[in-house]
Length: 533
Image (cartoon, rainbow, N blue to C red; front, side, top):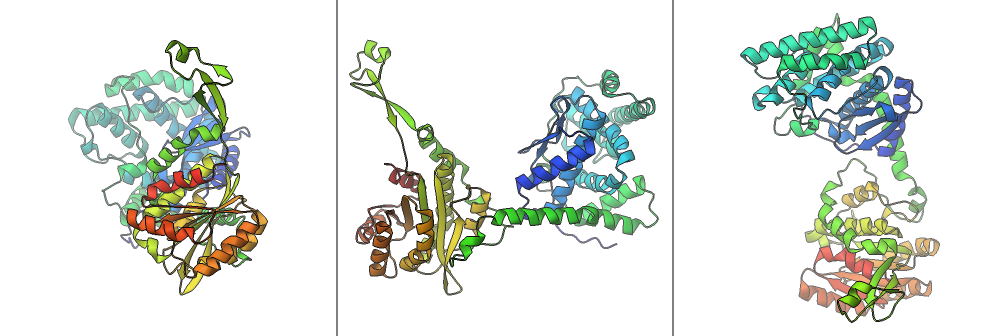
């Protein structure tokens, strides 16, 4: 069987979280035979069933190692295991201390054996998951102390192998404890014992491993363990073949291993979910294309480079009061007396509640001409921070951008007015490359039918301030103003002097308000201040 040495890197085929929630809810209720099961998706938390609450917490797909399809398969097996816990277990403890970790590990094997009696078709997916998880398991040589014993037990008990070296007394302890744990599983299944009975056996297992029940256990996402180890497809093939030899009676080892790696049983399901994700991504964009606007089509792009979490946090913090719509200010008269300021003999002893408001409908046009090419990444980050802030403030807004592609002017839809801001908009923005001139009048002409329909209170144009045709831009700006739209421009300068020059240019284009910035991180707060009454 060929063993290509293809890296197990990430790709960016995208499954929307709402689609994952739908399929996981359906599968978990079917597998667990519990129609009350609720799925919760959370970042970087291992799969965990909360039986008393009928909840299963699952990580996002990027918790796992591999391509999107490989990640989905591992995620799906994790969902199956937790669904089996919901069906066959009575409690799940925290993995973060030795007692809970050992109980949950033994229960994993028990519910897997019981689950396969009803769901035999999962065996190939479980083998695949074991092969992938083995690649991300740490080498025992890199772990020390009690953590090494716990990891060694987990490896040997669940797989029959150790990754790395374990010597002398430690090796004997782990083998003896694993044998005892297998007896626990066997007796529990044979006699129909449940979680409470297994829980009573854990103190003896802890004693055999010479651990403390409260020994801390570090839980790391599989993808974080693999960094720098250079695992590839050939490693996965070898591991799958090893597991197949041990666990499956296969007459044709190569064919069985190939079938497991290809995952054809699940591939159709995955492709259906991808189509559903793309259908949902494009919802609300189709009709806008009829106006001559374009939609960036690729959804397998990574938007993370244009997300500046620190900038987004700062912008949101700046306008936190605006989200509530009110702010208190000390004054010489007001609705409420502040005794503390009076005692301190401050001149303003009264509190006044001030209403903060922003125009509720906004259209934003982004210049992606070649003049912003040198700051394109920072420009996009500032735009994303602005959109996050507008969404945070509950403002209805639309975002468009223009550039030149293959010699043709394009006006791109980043976010239509009827959809919420999400990673979809960021993915579309990521794809647009700064190129060409600034045909601002032509773009205004393309957007005019949309503006008549959406009727924004304000239209904000982020531009280099040097349009191809000044006179045509002036005419278009005036036509928008006649529709009752307040036209605002924000110039983008390379430095302070350039910003001042652009500011002068904008004054001649008949915008109602205009200003220029040389620091791109100032864009979000400048725009939002322009939206104030």
